[in-house]
Image 1 (spheres, protein in one colour):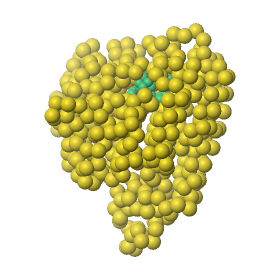
Image 2 (image 1 turned 135 degrees about the vertical axis):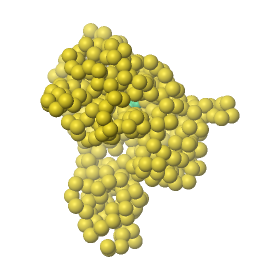
Image 3 (image 1 turned 180 degrees about the vertical axis):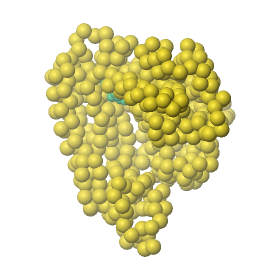
Length: 469
Ligand code: SAH
Ligand code: SF4
Ligand code: F3S
């Protein structure tokens, strides 16, 4: 057993330091920023090195076995740091947050003796209090999404600058219960935040420098938030309202379920100039048989219909997806259907995974699991095609001029990195520039000169060249 009785309130005047490490999806990134705000309010300084931390928060992901196991290897590394700290009398506490915390709860305390607090994704508001509890009382797995957002809103630092491309969680949780997926268990039932809170948060993000806002939700297009007038608003309605806020130049939303892609939302891609021509619309499989076994509630023809309508509304739309290979019972013929779907849709970008059985989900119970080597072979074949599609999409932009929102400095001196409307990373070199703010945070036209699999290279148009310092 490690140190006990380190009352964080009773420490010396030196500011306590907190290190936060984030795994998993964009929602975890959003949550970690809120946790950071909350800890700052509690008097912590945020540090990038666990060695000097008095508190480490691991914001974890449970989606596949590999993701969940990473947490335990990290806890092993932290144990070594704790031992070193012990030599100087420093004692770091460890809080495990996020989806592994929700899924494992007390089990986590048994498996890892250096964990002090276990807090699920909808109980972050309790973190400061849990840090003061004895270990045995420091597990919280309640689903209280409204409390969470209310508390996190209060903690948000409403003046600090934000990245030019910011996230805004509008919906959390999932009622779909795909048979491979842990999210409905780790994030709970669907919850939509009220419209007024979102407009307020978006306005605040713009005031702090955001130009591109990505609305987040595990099922973002199932959004149905309360309005002040006592009704509910859909995602398309919310997009229209957000587009009215001056200063939001780009709007995106992720992740959508094909079944919730309604006509109004499709029309929003045609009617709202700020809605970017890029959509992540996971299909998971191209086989009707497998889609049914996955409880996806859509077949391939519905997916094709939606894609056709979207491209009708916005001909240059770039599509991205998630695909799982080797779901239990998947045959060669099923896999061929997936390849066929991919060839037909032509993705600009796509994530692909080997099916990972997750305890407690129906897929894991099935006896017809696909052998690991078959999954690996299928994944390699699929990825070969997806990589070629991604490269082809990137190459299709060579010779064009794209408006690029510059977000950060590159690794090389004078290099800047931004994104096209289609989410492609663009690198430019402006070596003579002394003031990065002439580029970062701005949308500038770039002539695209070269395309690789993962990024583009371009140059600013003459008219946008910043003055030589
Ligand atoms: N709708 C969610 C999906 C989250 S999970 C969202 O908001 O992003 C992201 C992707 O992980 C899924 O689309 C799916 O392709 C993949 N995934 C989920 N469970 C999986 C499992 N058990 N094995 C392999 N991949 C999985
Ligand atoms: Fe998981 Fe399916 Fe819900 Fe997405 S829609 S979070 S894949 S259960
Ligand atoms: Fe992972 Fe939880 Fe997100 S399982 S993908 S962190 S919702």
